[in-house]
Length: 123
Image (cartoon, rainbow, N blue to C red):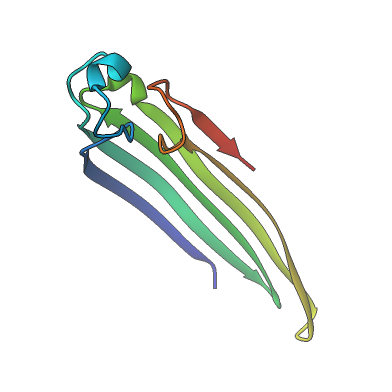
């Protein structure tokens, strides 16, 4: 039986130290603002698809995200997560999987000294 799921999500996030600045650093020198914190809304839309064919399965997942920062609006971005898998089987004892995954999102500021957004694409 084919399984199909559509989903939507709206999330509100608060971060007290977006750029992971040390307490000894004046935020004005790094961010141009006396603030370290920000809030943002993230909208996510996506789907999951699972198609069984005999002993095999074909799976497809996709989620699109749109993040909108309130104060540090240069961090606002759109990203996605995608995955396609073929769970193959010749017999119940002989199986395997082949797949592709891709993700594009804002990198963490934990290891970056600065405020320039770094969009990372992983495959």
